[in-house]
Amino acid sequence: MPTQAEAQSGDNTVRDIDVAKATSWRTGRIFLDDLSLADAISEMNRYSPVQITVDDPRLAQLHVNGMFRAGEQDAFVNALEQYFPISAERRGDHSIILTARR
Image: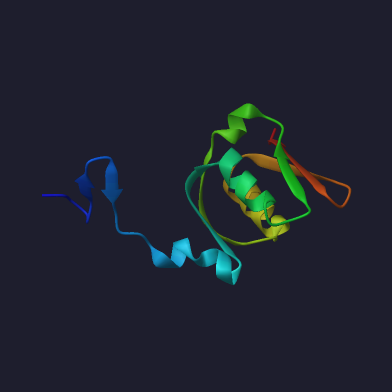
């Protein structure tokens, strides 16, 4: 018997999903569930003209969880600086570079 509402049938897998997470984009929220920092940044960058980049490949492998408002790059970056050993450098109006905090 499948566990946690999973059922396998041939090549198809059926799973319960969190509907709030799946439809969060409609309300301007982005749920990051154990994503690498590189993937989390990619998701955040989709919704903003301010683009975040990572200067250190080791940082890109950190994992991020949380809920953020789409387009609110500063709030996202501030959370990263609080939680991880990361420093952010704003370059102009459209670029934020993340580096390892020294």
